[in-house]
Image (tube, rainbow, N blue to C red):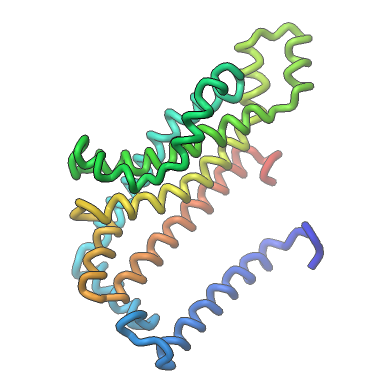
Amino acid sequence: MRPLEPVPSSQRVAYGLAFFALFVGLWALATFGGFVSKTFLANPLTMLQEGYELLVKHGFLFDIGMTIWRVVGGFVLAALLAVPVGVLMGAYKPVEALLEPFVSFARYLPASAFIPLLILWAGIGELQKLLVIFIGSVFQLILMVAVAVGGTRRDLVEAAYTLGANDNGVIRRVLLPSATPEIAEILRLVLGWAWTYVIVAELIGSSSGIGHMITDSQALLNTGQIIFGIIIIGLIGLISDFLFKALNGWLFPWKFA
């Protein structure tokens, strides 16, 4: 191995699968070998059996669909607000001076702390869960987009003004084209964070979703179902991340080739 030396795609896949195999092997050794009680950690076979029961007999596919809808819905709402505001903050320093202190303050507030207020304001329906994901994502997105836009090379901006561009032209023809690939990558990263917030949203006042299933399983000490739910979240997140990365590579091949 050498610093920053690229790895062929086939080897990258092999390395990733090897680590997953090692993880499952250690898990199986700990559980089947009796090192950990099944009360606290189900073995891999029990987890698969419990997952099959959930999918076939308990309608878990509906819970998965509801969780995906909540993540996508809350994330899209956050992106629709955060990207324009972030572009304005990155492009115009007075807007940045006005908004950055509040946004920097708000991004440290845990989304879970808003749940009691959101239940009072929006009830325990879907809007409350969407707002938890929205609050958890929007302030991070705003700052990251602002940094991406503000990091545009000054020589490109000065060249655009020299060639006769006005302020709107600089934003449309220089700042946005320069920052768009990085903004797309920021959206991919923050989508992963949104998955952590949806489980928090579903732990309280929810009758569906993966988080709701995990809460019910915890009350029954069914660690097999809990682990299966966690793994499903990871698999969905991994698939969405790969799809987002492939889309970014297709849209911006000069950046992510």
